[in-house]
Image (cartoon, rainbow, N blue to C red; front, side):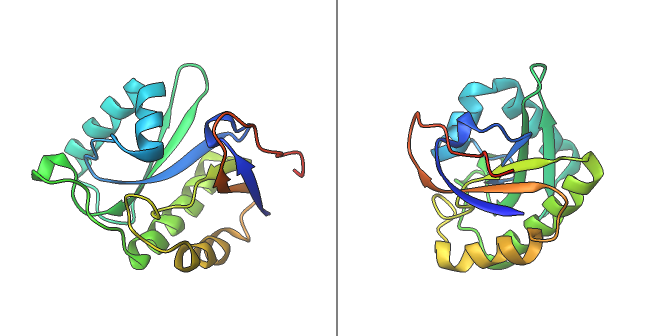
Length: 163
């Protein structure tokens, strides 16, 4: 089931937070920057994974921290500093592919809940009205509860009680 919520995604009770990035993303803007700050080892491990795997657009990688935190990095954008440039714009095609990868990852990992921001609409440059239907199309039939953080309210825990 997909629920739209308002609040600070960093305060979610979901098992994992998924967000969109580029391979080798410097993670210095938006939600990626906050996740980098909260989980510096995630950022380091992500770069190692990118260096070893050379992920294509549409791939997904999950990181699990020592305290039980889980972050899913969805590759929706070209670029990243390894290519000598800032992350580029996302595309609807890459977001759709990344959501398919997320769906597979949810099943493989047995996740019961995942929190998503308005994917690829900040640094990624996409319009939310183009991305929102992709989330419904790809994730509506998953076993997991999906919390879509439609409105960011810093420091406010979202009402996720509808599980």
